[in-house]
Length: 472
Image 1 (cartoon, helix red, strand yellow):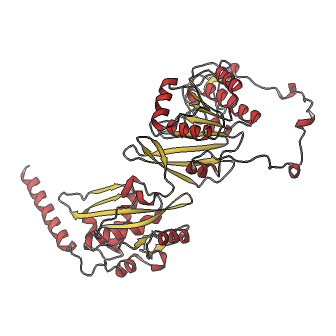
Image 2 (cartoon, helix red, strand yellow):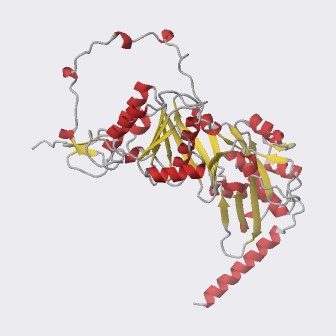
Image 3 (tube, helix red, strand yellow):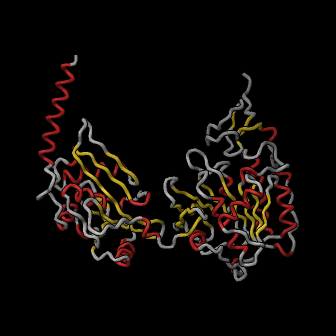
C-alpha cells in the first residue's frame, strides 16, 4: 500500500493534511494551510555557532541595571493607568477594538500630547489619506508642529520614513493594512501580518522606539490575524464601548511592564475623546425625591470601584409567558435572583410578573457582586418603597438565599463612603430576607398583591385555553 504524504502544513500550529483546505482542522484558523515544500525549514545540523561580539555577551542578571529605562507619560492619565504608569521605551503596544469605537481618535490624541512636549511623533495611516487625518486632527485639536503624518501601506517605505524623521514615538494604523515585499500574498493575510509585526517589533527593540499598533478584530471580537501577533508585542490593549453610549473602556489583556487588571475610562465627544478620571457621575441618576425600583451598587472594573445604579420595574403580566427584559446585566442571573426572592425571601408570585432590569449609563455588570443590588431593586419595585439615597448594596446571592462576600469588599465600602453613601448592605447582613427586612421590603405589606395577581393571571390563562379549544 502506498504511504500517504502530508504535503500541506498549518503555519500556526503545525497541523498536517494530505490535501489543501481553507481552514486548519486543529486551530480553526483560515488561510494558514500552505504547501509544506514552500515553507522555509531549518536543519538543526546545518546551523553553525556564530561568534558573539563583546557588547552582546550574556551577563548576570544582577549586573543588569534598569536606571536608564524610565517611563514617559503619554499625556493621557487613563491610558497611562492601563499601561502601568506610562510608555516604556522600545515597547510594542497593540490596541484592538471594533470598527468605529475610537481607536484612531485615541492614538491621534496620544500622538498630539506626546508631540506637544517637544518629541517627534510619526503617525502612519494606512487606511486614511493625509488630508483625512488632518481634518480629524483639526476637529480634535491635535495640530502640533512636531506631529508628522504619512499615508503609507508599504513596510519598506515606513521604515524609510522612520530613518528620515527619527521620531520618539511611532504609531501605525493599522498593522493589518501594511504589506511587506518580503512576503507573498495580500495585506492582512497571516504571512503578511507576521512579517510586518516582526519587523516593527525589531525596529522598536533596536532603536528603543515605542511603537503603537492598531489591530482589527474579527466577528467574535478576537484580534484578527495569526495568534503570533499577540505573542510578539509587549502590551495588548482592547478598546471597547457601546455605540449607543459615549462611554469607552481600555483594558489591558497582556502587559509585560505592569498589571493587567487596570481599566481606563473615556468619553467620546464631538471634539474627540476625553478621559474620565472619576466616572461615578456617569452611572448614577439621582432625582430630587427617592423613586422605588432603584438601588446603587459598587462594581469593580479592574482595580477601580465604580458606583452603578440598577433600576427595576415589575408589572403584572398580560401574556401567557412573563417577560424578562434586561439591559446591562446577565439575564440568567436575573432569573436566578427572581427564583431566590420567591422561594427564600417570601415574595410570592414575583416570577409570574413582567420584570425589566436596566443599568444607568449603558455600563454592563458581569460580576456576581451586583446580585444584592438587583434583588433590592426588584423588591423595591414590588413593594413601591424607595431605597434611601444614602444606601448602596453589593454581594453575591446563593441559591440558598445567603449573601456571599465579594472581592475587594473593603475598597468598595470605602469608595461608597467617599461618595456619600452612609449605609452599606453587604455579606454581613447574612441573607436576602434579612436585607429586605432591614429595608422593610420583605413580604409583609406589599403594595402589589402578588398572590391576587397570580390568581388573576391563572384565570386569564384558563380563559385563553378555553378560547383556543373553541376555535377548533
